[in-house]
Image (cartoon, rainbow, N blue to C red; front, side, top):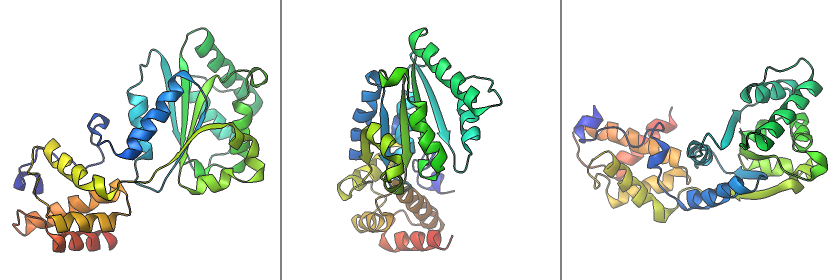
Length: 267
């Protein structure tokens, strides 16, 4: 197995790595600052970026670090729910036994959030991931759901996360009211050329492996193949480690990276 071959305790490029070991890219630094704003100022935030750039990871890390006695965090990832199904899922996440009518569930949700904020002093943060797949009716209702006491107060923070097409969707005239309510927004750039070598070396160090397994040319090849996606970087290097160990090679050169990329491209 490649782990023992390279003297690593675990695969540091696996997606299951604990968020506390996150490598701080520029994206992560920026989004941390913007998410921290939500702690004191409930509002609507919009985060977009291509797949594998760390949007979900960043948000999950942020939520994991919040004090559960002070914050109620709800993470929803959906694709084709109806408005009723959306309300039902949100209500269940808030610990509510949902009513049978949408209007009744709506009131349950708002009443519960008001109780959490005013009486229990708990801040509510709701994240909807892959929001580009939300139906138009749900997006329209998000504006209504965030209305409390004639817009005089924001009772919870709403995070919308998705691919760049989400920006296009929200720019439609029909969604203008919701778009105007967005206070924070950021589009992920992905891992940069300046960051990738430090990222790779930090991962090997984390697993107590040799930091010089990849040649400079191999690192350059990884960057040219990853489309700025950390997920793709992880997949390529994991595959390259498997190939290198099978060839009894202690070094991953450009040829092995190319072979790994081609294998992944073939599925």
